[in-house]
Length: 245
Image 1 (cartoon, helix red, strand yellow):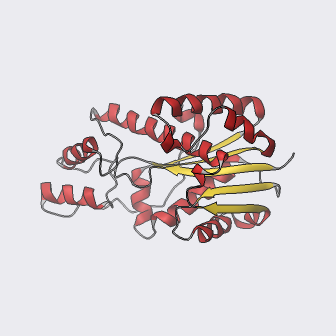
Image 2 (cartoon, helix red, strand yellow):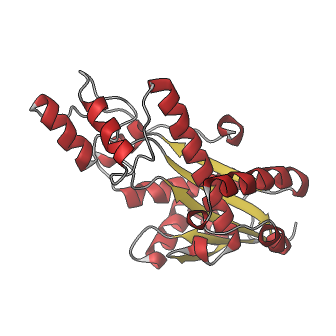
């Protein structure tokens, strides 16, 4: 097998509602132009319709060309439990490493392109390498801020992560009968949804209880701090791409 390139990115770091989704896309180095030809770009630069169209093409092509997709969905409960003793940065390090191992058999002929979430991009790369264990020593790692806007494979990973994050939010909205919006604090629909969900007797599982806007909304309705999640082992996260398509 020739050299492969792996792009890794996330969607849903900032929202107060729903999961954080991480995607690792592994393709042969020579297939970069295939992604360029179907219009891959940073997911933030594409309309929802365009993202979904390109996502469908990536999934279809992956079956023909031996591309591998590692998709990890970490729900709000798991995020809250991690945040009891960790940070979003350390969580993303773990999720990036897990997505990479889902996307590839470990060999020495890989280059990783990481969209770094840490203010120190090189440190983020070192931490992901450490999280991969001994296998991480065989990877060349390029870790930069906004890698999704400069590297086509990382851009493709950002599209997959974003589309599947949106699908998860749409599914939650239907289940709850509430328009959750995007989940971001600035989203008016999300603000309304958080207020409504915090008026209930028990915090809804889709809310990230460690987020300050959720804590404030709960305090306003109940005049007491939001109850913490039950402490338990941080378990694995949903990772099968087909479950989100």
